[in-house]
Image (cartoon, rainbow, N blue to C red; front, side):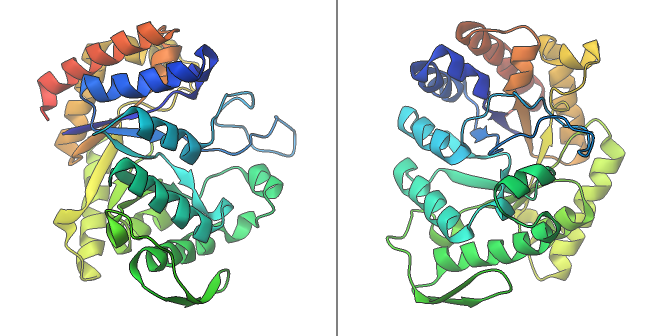
Length: 308
């Protein structure tokens, strides 16, 4: 089983060198993938907005810029997003940014994409929240065209180009992996039809449900003429740290519990698992040194149970 971490933006409080040092430490510990969280802005609570999944004052660094900084501090670890809210962004620009990151990192990019949930964020970015699913589907095809074709001509409902090109080619070219995040029916469909992998959201502990969903994705891939065995499946080892229940907040303080969750995920059919390092911070590791120590302990305990 391969292990990813979702980078804790909160570490910026210790300065730019701390961001660099933590990225290098995550690689040195032996994790396979470093992913960045994505939101551009967060809405303050209002009566006309649904409850927020995260506090509005949660510190967030722009995902792709922070990944480029991490790329310069590392040499082997995979780099990506968990997840980038694609419909909020212009996909030609995202294609260029991701392919540039692939060049500068030596072909280490795996991009995780989703549609998000925060309508007020879409409003702030001038994008129609109600069209996000259709925009997502079209944007993925548009990005693949930029990475694949010498000359791109594309006419969609939202995006278009006529006889254009994007040079130079990146190390992975048209094969930059696109993983899909989310548990909705639309997300499951995208994984099976166009995605290279699935980033499941929460409830990885529900082995029966997760196993059934993985099988649905594989069946859908096969029906669409794709090889289901080439797909990857990533579980979250705990819910994001938005639950005030003490057992949830302290989850990462107990390596046995985290390793046990990884075992359950592997038995359900996942070949990847990810940890939200902000949860490590919430569980008590409040500075750079403590976070690195906790990650080392967690990594080694998980590897004892699920291997590499």
